[in-house]
Amino acid sequence: MKKIVILIAFVMLAIAVFAQPSKVTYPEIKVLSQKRDAFYFKASRDLLGSEVEVIHDNGKIVAQEKLKGRRMLIDFFDMESGIYVIRVTQGRYVKTFTHEKKLKSNAFEMLGHRVVHSDGTITYGMVSFYQPGVSQ
Image (tube, rainbow, N blue to C red; front, top):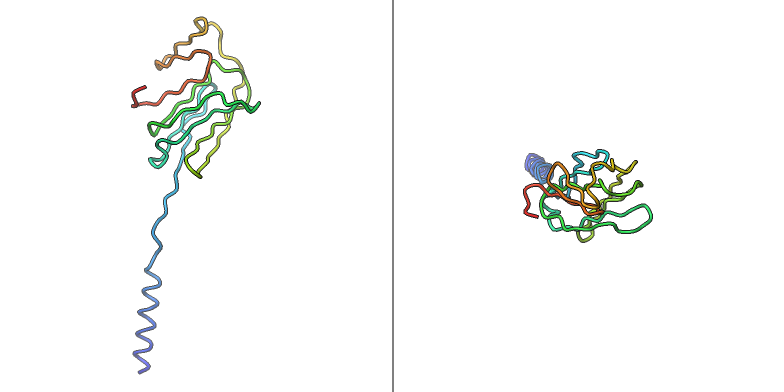
């Protein structure tokens, strides 16, 4: 009888040890580059379709766009200097990053108000978004 009780206790212990809760995955955002005039990040698939907003330190929303692909480049080339908050929102999930634009970019690179960048993006006095592999 004592052996049966010990065996049952051992089996119950083994069941409790090997029973693990299902893995819960949380959305992730990895910053790939944060250079002088650009903020480049990669998001998990869970965040496709989420809202990306760029907010100046004065509280004004400078730009907003839906996340269509997993990677996004936010170009601050033609923006005034200051601290910007990049906010990614999907439902109850909110992730924020800060980006500091120190100086205005070289005025000789500008063609009037239209700026053509080496990666093919064009800005018109505002923040431009570039998502590799996604038709614009």
